[in-house]
Image (cartoon, rainbow, N blue to C red):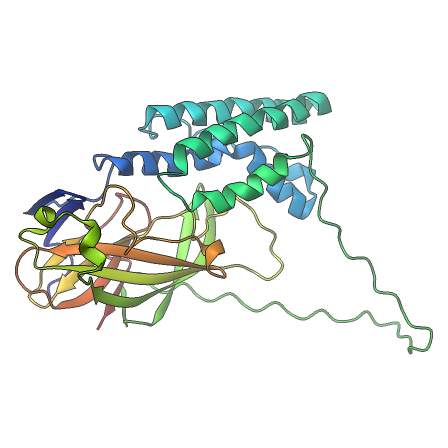
Amino acid sequence: MRRFGSYGAVLLAAGLVVSGCGGGDKGGDNAGGANVKTSCSIAYLTATAVPGKLVAYKSTGDESKLPVEDTTLKLAGSLIKDAKVRAIAEKGKANAEAFNAALAKKDNAARDKAIVDAKPILDEYKAACSAANPDLNGAIGYLEESLASGTLPEPVAKAGPAPTSAAAPTSSAAPSKPKPKPLPVVTPRGTKVKLGQPVIVELVKDGKKSLAQMTVTAIVKATDDDLKVLKKDSLKGILGVFFVRADFKDIRPEGTPFDPAVPSVDSVYPEFEIGTADGTTWTKMITFGEFKPCKDSASYNNDGVRKLCTPFAITSGSTDVRAAALTGLEIGKTDSNNPLYTWTR
């Protein structure tokens, strides 16, 4: 099979198909509803900056970590293409700056005002973005809860020392703490594995890093029932629609508190391509609106595993799909010639 880099692309919606070979559509902001979804993804940390900090504070009680980072504040800008979402992000930025200023002056009244003002901004963001990405609703629930008191939430109580029994023998030696399990090593870029085998991926966002485990679990052909939601005319010339399904799970050090600024499997959007037996590779098909037979989930809906699904439409040549490659971890930012990882049958 040729290396990934020569491919065809299909843009498929409920009633629209555009196919071709060459550059391919990477799912950027030209793809209708993808414009809003991409803008919402970029705006998330800015529009939810203050409640995000309160969620982290509730876990740690560390006031030194309350100020919103400069890297987060810079996210409200020209990268957010949707004007409505950009305006919400700008409100979030202004509120976060007021929150930071109040913290610097130790002005609790101004701090609490910023917390109260964060609620309508979060409501606007939820109204603008939940339709484009329904999986946001679960995460936003935690953010809404952090704002409920209108001031700093009460940190989670830390367990005190366990009571000792009068009959228990005493010892001057402190009890030994179990050593945390070592974190796995990142799988070298360019590695090829068999379908169903996991790789360890490094996530990087705003200068912060984390680890995740990714496994392409299946490459399956869509059934007639799967395609019922599409208009018949939109399927003309398509030889087959295929789904690449993958599991994506965070790997965190034991005892690490939740930090919304650290990248997670819910804050990145993996990009895949497939390769067929004749050496052709295909980029994903772009769907407008919700395509229920093949959609991503959130990790908090599946016991910590984010379920990914990417659809592909093949319009010529072989329909014997032999490989799926991870070509990037952000929407529109892919490298077909140098995939991060490849899964083969």
